[in-house]
Length: 383
Image 1 (cartoon, rainbow, N blue to C red):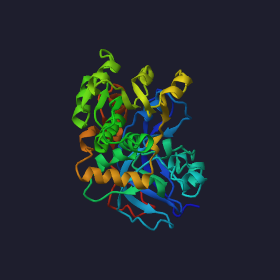
Image 2 (spheres, rainbow, N blue to C red):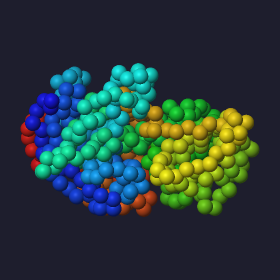
Image 3 (cartoon, rainbow, N blue to C red):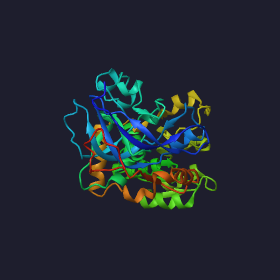
Image 4 (cartoon, helix red, strand yellow):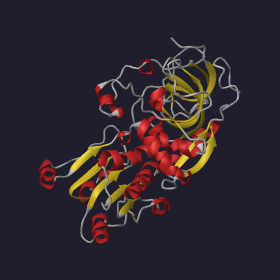
């Protein structure tokens, strides 16, 4: 049972495909034993959010989206002993039990544990109807309740707006490079798509010592941004012969790793033709559920090439987020430069439009929840 009565929050509720989110008052249950309540400071808009509201991915409505977040601990369950009220944290959608076979093997994104939040959302509307937490968080809201495994404490000198990007986009892009592909120094990396996930992958490849790092992106503004974040070359898929350009850059070889970080189906066309023997094609971006690709098994066998799926960068939140924070603090990972714009919660629809138009690396919602004042009061109502 919950350990308190809960609070009233403001949240952006999506009630159907193509409908603008409505800002509503919802009830948020108090955290259970191994859960925490977080006053949301910032939540970045991920293209996955749009995939649901635009109908690209199937889901049930209504729900509250937003899963790439940061904030301050407002309340803790009675089994949470390593966090205190007021602690700054990053919030991720990755929820782990720590006990199932996947968790014991360090495969957090494949957790099969039976956690309370998996079966019952802590959100309810005025009629008492439960409103699902989109992607396990529901952070387009002033406050959230999540499992302890979903949060990582942030040092006090790290800004929470930029830290929110570690909840999904940067965690996914960097994890694709370090966890899924295991990129090594001197290897050739191609990143197709230069949004937030792609820029995260480019920065991780630079940190790993990969060279060259080739960005493939149709928008000139994002190609320029990719060069600023560590890409050594940038190509336009509409006008450049990609394979020829890669060979020219490397002295005749193709790529050791190709990362598809966009869900645009066209990005998959011919991607395997950019790979050298022994190379990895890593599919990070998720297109519509009905998109398929054709492969030639004999080619994969003959060239020792691999096609790898990558969910959330195969990340271990408790390990990878602190490592990324350290890269940020030492100047190797630029998070602040990836934040293109910020909006209050009431302007979420405008923020969605920015992402649809491809204008931003990351736009961040600032729900304006109370952060330090009265956050310990489990029965209070935020202003």
